[in-house]
Image (cartoon, rainbow, N blue to C red; front, side, top):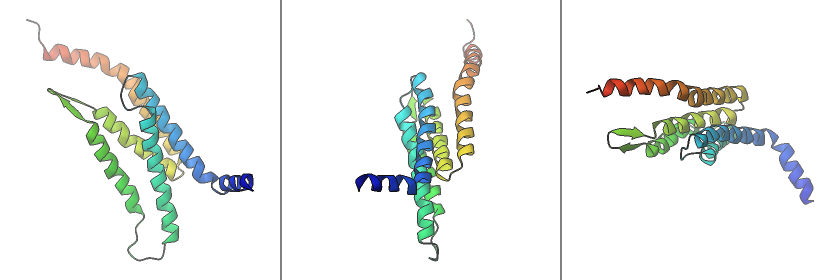
Length: 161
């Protein structure tokens, strides 16, 4: 009986499971890049943010079906509150060290990773995958392009004596 119930659960919920698994996988890809550049928020953090956003979207869809006829009920509020919650989390990752800010890229990464999770939660797999590829492009390729620009900037800021 137990095996039948498990099989039934997975077959009945395969779309939901796929959405969550894709959200986790895409979040992990972004987190893996962050680990490679020695950042604190890595695979677990980004996977949890992406999956959490997907989970809240799935909940929003499910309750919108259950409470469809109730006046004033707006399941889209859940999606909007994901953005607020991630903004709070991202703000906590920004630190002022002397005259330099750190954590801005981490905060932006959290924000976009939640968007990727939301896309996966809605079943928009191509959008979620495309956004992940673009995030990885920004993190990897732009890192190489940014280094020479920073050197030029440092030379301009500190003129030779």
